[in-house]
Length: 281
Ligand SMILES: NC(=O)c1ccc[n+]([C@@H]2O[C@H](COP(=O)([O-])OP(=O)(O)OC[C@H]3O[C@@H](n4cnc5c(N)ncnc54)[C@H](OP(=O)(O)O)[C@@H]3O)[C@@H](O)[C@H]2O)c1
Image: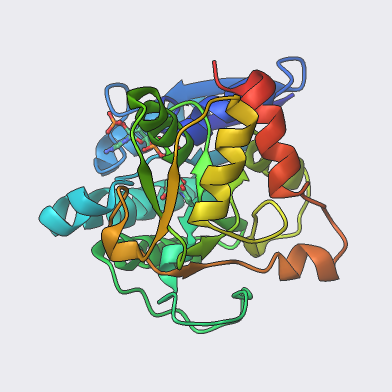
């Protein structure tokens, strides 16, 4: 049985991992910041040395863009130093490590889907701190999977949830038509991670559901699946009801997994339909 340590287990991806894993296949240690604060090297070392997991999955992070802009020290402490601490214990106990990362390591100015080999250039504190976390993991371990994803929704705070809350208010909703991404279900991302950790195919992966859409098209699809009826207005990012400083182009190409033929993600529409049917509770 593989021993799995899921850090940040109360978050969207941590919860999806717990929902998707087969308890007969894995012995699981869950921790969130009350159990193990990943910014504390002492707490991380002690938990890792006592439990000696085979795989560490780092789902912990400061993920709100605005919180990162307001408190860069906190963002770097968790997203960079936290990742460093987990990489140090992973190397010490010879565990594999999965570091969750984001399209925000790119500047979003491209017109083509970003491949794993493309030059990073984060423009937000969140993106910069996530890139620093990736670099620490590369520096301290070789048995790593760096998994970059985008527009993730699961059980927690995400676009689908906040959009559906606005739908309940019954007003006209303004959604950006000039922001592009690949909506990705946390459950599908979790399935990919649980598959990869059994392999030795280490390295950096872009991991998103397939297909691309604008935020507006995403909202339209959510609305259609919800069976509700409100007016949607396609607007520029700045006028959106969901404004946040984010890269305008958040499309990742799952290039490495396609060339090594290791895994296929479903389309974003299929994954969204599954989530709306059964994945939200
Ligand atoms: N959501 C996306 O669209 C997306 C896309 C690409 C990549 N990612 C990456 O995937 C990872 C997980 O994302 P998510 O959506 O599951 O995030 P999430 O829902 O915000 O969960 C993050 C979890 O980490 C916990 N945490 C914060 N500081 C911690 C600390 N010092 N020690 C231990 N745990 C701590 C949080 O606890 P509190 O809530 O109590 O602070 C929360 O439970 C993040 O690294 C994120 O950057 C997310």
